[in-house]
Image 1 (spheres, rainbow, N blue to C red):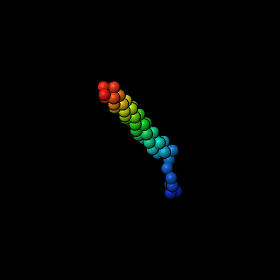
Image 2 (cartoon, helix red, strand yellow):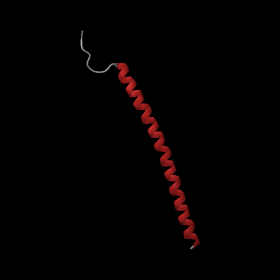
Image 3 (cartoon, rainbow, N blue to C red):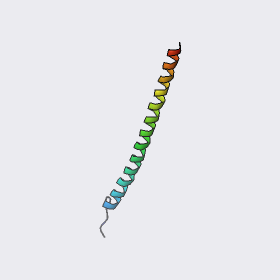
Image 4 (cartoon, rainbow, N blue to C red):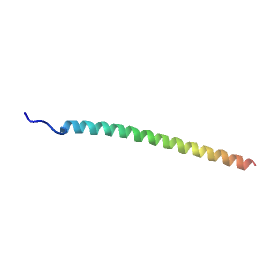
Length: 55
């Protein structure tokens, strides 16, 4: 019987599918975090501007 070396096409497709799903989830989470950071930065600058205008 011939010894099998390497991976089958199904195994490779399965691994690539799992990697694709995880990378999609990570990128979508990163986009949400970036938007929250930008929003927080905006409000920090707004607060500084209000304090500056009051003084």
